[in-house]
View (cartoon, rainbow, N blue to C red):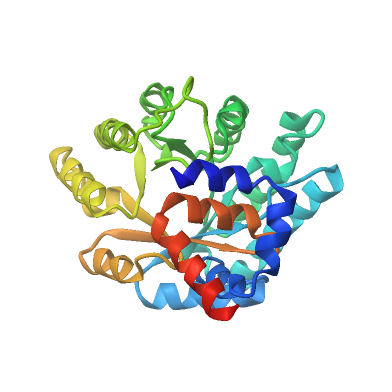
Length: 308
């Protein structure tokens, strides 16, 4: 099982230095990371809109060690909102945020993260878009859900993410599948112990289907985060069984992965949103993409050998 090894490496400074220096790294990183700056990512949003796609934008970076860094993350998102406003792209682009970037792991981190993310959510609402709170490792989730609940008092369109590999998630899904909610379901991409998470892929997939059914049968707005053709087909069938119209749920896939499928689903009338990450602190995000799919790791290995 390479996935857990890669996820462990995502926290290693030594591996960070090695991977960053590898000659083939940039080629592979460019596949998953849309750019380093707002200027580089805006044309991608415009191109997606022209193709009938929507996006969710993620300013990458998680290793926050000071309140000043958390404030810088907040300001990076506020800069993004301002650019979307000027270009009138708000309706086509929402934002995804990791609360670790906003100081969640620091002293008084819950209050700090809430204070930093609130102005981003407020600014997003002002230009006709919204924010989704990404799920991170299981130790952060109670705080994330509490912040989500607090933000929804003033900004009910604020979304959150749940992960099918965690035992707790079916209960979370039942609680969240209420009118007005927006919930993204993913498999999960953090190294979690067997005491809290399924370790077998088949069990994770079965849980994904059960949770998707809960969301489809609920009153909220499900966001299906998957590249798996079988799970996508199952989600479509569950949507039909639940009597949902095609605009009453959406699919989400990562930038750089299965781009033809993005277009196909949009052409069928589905709402299709591309999760688009950008920024300079790409390492943790990149390593999780490698861990999720062996083909990504093989692609990376070939690139290093070719460039070496």
